Length: 640
Image (cartoon, rainbow, N blue to C red; front, side, top):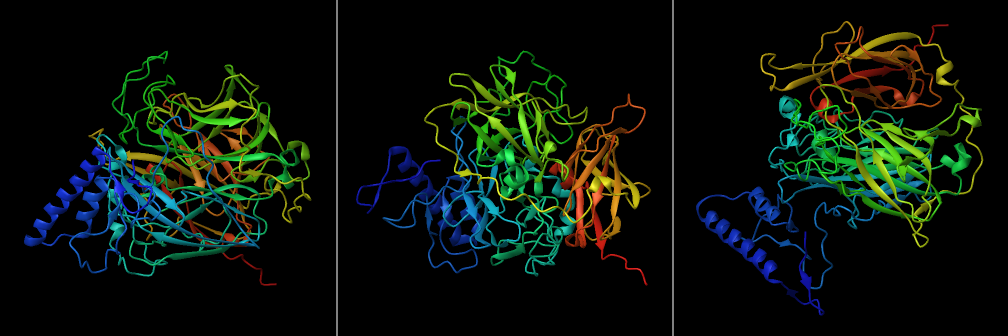
């Protein structure tokens, strides 16, 4: 979008012909609304629709303030002559842009205080973007904290009732439609108990962090903030034993998570101190790369002529491009890196410069709503070794085994919601390099996640250093007071399974219901008012077997805790690290049994006491009902 040009004196505006035409269009729209005022009441959304469609932003009084003038104050550059230009709501860089790192907000003296506003804005193609914005206009800042820090985050909901109107866009009609039954609560109720679920409700989930599931901390079922509410304060202390690594924040209103996250509502959290767990990272420059998905910018374009295979186009039941098994063709969603879009069909990569042969730590977050990543760094068509030091915020390696603190791989699978941190070596001067995501087979019923470039890595001796660097190696992290999770015998074993069902079995185009079910219970879509499906006690360690009885991949995620993957479809794994999100392979009718993962679930931390959720982190599935409740009760203390 473009802004007005201010003249040298700042006393007025200098408008090009097309800008004059834009202002004329606005004046005509205002005149039309003025006539309407003579015959009927015109509500605030009428002004929003007119001005949003022209790329303008309301800077006048709040919606509930009396309007003493027919013309509200709107601006595309500044609120008054000589004022600084206002940012375009949820503005984004163009394809092929150089990557900008998210702004860092760091704790000072053990406290991180910040204000965030969640906004949305309709785009010229009808799609809707969402963005977290700081008072100075920075989008989706990275929150940098240390274990034990106090975080005070004041969130303002500034969402407007804008439904995506982009033709052929599945997220234009989110799965939330079937959940509006839960949205009839009083919008003026206490946000802690509101439970309101609507397209303009919001809250925050601090994904991966072991914090109490309480309002004002990390409760994501009943907490619901409305546009008319005052700033809502999140106040929590980062646990003193929180592993150093990459976490993230995003909204978690059931039924509406997918459109908000796909629109860009997400940001990274870094718990500092990874150099104390992995000495190889000490002193390294570091980058935060947030990979998001979004609706296709060019949905009607044919595949690029450079693709070796042009598969037949198919649509899966969610309305996205279906998996065609070739690794090519139209993807279900476009991807972006730090908001730089990499659109189908030619995938012009974002640009990143680094010094030749320089070693850096890359922290990569898959903030996609539905897209799987299969990352590789390619030099001259050869995949490079990446030194993985952390998965899902937890450093690699069993305690006391420094040799396991880094694992080298030439590709890294990352389901939606997951994170990876790895050491990378830059290309030599003159050597072309690309960060890519290779194709992911999501199953017969899954979306198409084809091969595509993400970032062009350019070796340059004059490349600027990243904004942040790790300190020199500090003292090692203190040893855990608890035994390694993989060495603990579980007190019980449970089985859960993913499944799907058409609402009308006779109509293959009817809506899909998504379930995650405890074995022995009846599959039902998530109901926040129902009791918990699972009850455990703090201090317990359990094994959960998660089966997939559907023909597409699912990503299992649970709030508040991490777990160890101990078995993959019958094969012992015993990974030397913990996760909070894991892929569950899809079922095929050629299989003799349902594929599954076995997870060692850790409820030993006192912060887990309370009620929270587990779900598929493909957010269209979670919105569609694939979520359940667990309650962790205080420990049982023997009478003697």
